[in-house]
Amino acid sequence: MTSTILIVGTFDTKNDELQYVKSVIIDQGGKALTMDVSVLGDAPHPTDYSKHDVAKSAASSIEAAIACEDENKAMQIMAKGASELVSELHLKNLFNGIIILGGTMGTDLALDVCQVLPLGVPKYVVSTVSFSHLIPPERLSPDIQMILWAGGLYGLNSVCKASLSQAAGAVLGAANAVEKNTDNKPMIGMTSLGSSCLSYMKLLKPALDARGYETAIFHATGMGGMAFEKIASQGGFVCVMDFALPELGNLLAGSVVNAGNDRLMNAGCAGIPQLVAPGCLDLIDFAGWQDIPERYLDRPFHAHNRLIKSSALNNEERRETAREIGKRLTESTSQSRSPAHVLLPVQGIEEWDKPGEPAHDPDGLAAFNDEMRSSIKDPLQLTEIDAHINDQAFADKALEIFDQWVEDGIVARA
Image (cartoon, rainbow, N blue to C red):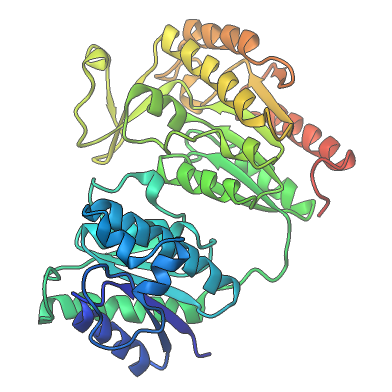
């Protein structure tokens, strides 16, 4: 298979580096297209898509970008144009993968461009700020790949060639190897955590498989929820079982271990039927390196590992999360009118809140359950289950509602 890779960058200042990437791709048996997103300077050699093509795709011009006299505004014009043009080229099947080079300016543009491409299109960003805290999770597309552009500020050298050659080989290899979905099974999106905390997926996935559906389970530790929300926003699921919501509590608590401000919003806005449960919404997760906000300093912390540490929400904070669930579901479904059914397992919402376990807090659970009963209102539906979220009874009720939605035509049949 011969794949075509679209190479994007500022060819006025990084022509040597971009041409080097092109040469590696061609030497490895691939084909290449080039797109210039420069503003002030001109590419030394013609590119397949010029900076004028890019600006035009943003309903603007290079002259208008220069007239801004503001590098940020000018580059946003180019980011918009590049995103539009890349989306158009993808719809025409003109490339199989994309690689984008840049510093902070180029990375800002690259993040927008990658967002317009669907899951499965290889997206490689070679950046001087890869893995930096400058990049918020919500700017990342679900399957983006980033490579640190070491020694890449200006000009070619042996250090940056090591990064660039690996990136060129990686995007071409990914484009050649990516497995396309050929069975076209309807997809269920599910959120969870590791099975030591939440284990309902072990009961639900085989049952959904037997019904002819494919189930994608997302680890709700920030990036997983972000990917889940992005795919939901693109209509990638026929139904979601959003049963792990710690990212929402983390967001309200100010933890960086969150999935962005649109958590619990995209499925409803996209008209996707939702089954929702408050799995693990009693804990707060903080990054291992993060300074703990002052209001949480009087609580015991458990260091899960060097990357993440956890504490518990108090009664009022648990009530706040319950109100936020109702608010977000109501707002997101108000236009699409898609059904949202909340399952409330009244005996507990994660393995460690069972009697005898360290997170056992019957008063906090009672406060949360009480607030959920008053926060989930028509047209939202609420079903209480006299069971723990990890019990068979919870999975059985979820499947019962799902099966009824299939019978009623709300969820597409497999």
